[in-house]
Image (cartoon, rainbow, N blue to C red; front, side, top):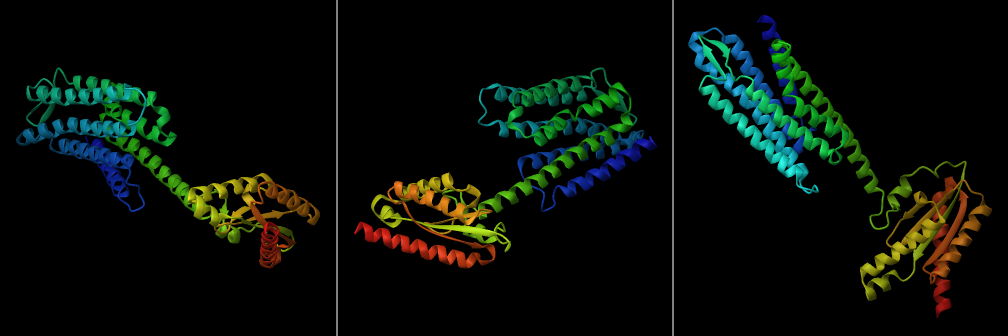
Length: 373
C-alpha cells in the first residue's frame, strides 16, 4: 500500500509539471495539444481519484465517496477517448471514402455503450461494490475493459487506413494516445502490478509530451525558415529580391571577380495600362523564364518592379562576355523584351559595378527607342 501511494504521488507530481508545461506561451494551441491537455487532465483526475481511494480505503464512513470516485475513474477514460475521437474526426474532414466517418461514429457509439453499461452495472452492484470502505470487484468487472478494447480496435483501424494523412510524429502521438488505456488493463488484470499503473500511465504521457515538444521545435524551425524564405523571395516570379541581393555574401569576397547583368523589362507600364496587370505579370514571368534559361536561378534577383539582376561568380571576363552576348541575342529574339547592361570586376567594387551596369542598361534602352523611331 505504501509503495503504491508513493508511486501515485510521484505520478501526480510529474503530471502537474506536464500540465503547467502545456500552458507555457511557446506551446502551440493546435488541436493536437488541446486534446492532449484533455488527456493530461483526465489522467491527473484518475490518479488523484486512485490516490484518494487508497488513502481512505477501509474507512466505512467514506464508502459512498469511495464508490463515487471509483465510478468516476471509469468515466475519466471515456472522456479522454471521446476527446481523441473528436480530434480524429476533425482531421479526417475531406478524406476520400466513408470508412473514417462510420468508424469514428462507431467509436462514439461504443464509448457511449461503455459509459452506460458501466453506470448501470455499477449501480446494480454487478460491476463493483464498496463494503465497509473496501472495493470489491463484481462479476462483470471485465465488461468495461472488453468494450474499451473494441473501441481501441476501431481507433487503430482508423489510424492505419488514414496513416498517410499524418506526419510521423503525429502518428506516434496518436498510437500512444489510442493504446494508453491498455496500460492499466495489462498491469492490473494480467500481471497484478496495479501499483505500477499510475507511473506507467505517466511515463507514456511523458513520452507523448516529449514528442509534442520535439514537433513544436521542428515546426518552429520550419516556420522560421519559411518566413525567412518569404522575406527574400519575390512573390510573383519566385526569384530572390533586392534584400536578398544585398544580404547574400557570395560575391562579397574581394579576392574574386563578379559579373552583373542589369535588365529592365521594356513596355511593362504600357502593357499594364492597355492590357491590364495580369498581362503585365505575364510579361514579367516570361522574362524571368528567359533569365532562368541563361543564368543560375539562385543568382537572379528581381530588384525593382521591372528591373532584374543576374550575378555571375567564378567566371573569367571572356566567359562572362560570352554569356551576356548569348543572353542579349535571346532577348532580341523575344521582341526586344528587355534592355540589358553588363559590368565585370572585383567583388569589392560591387556597388560601382551595379551603377555601371545600370548606366549601360539605360543606354541600351535609349538605343532601342531610337531604332524604333
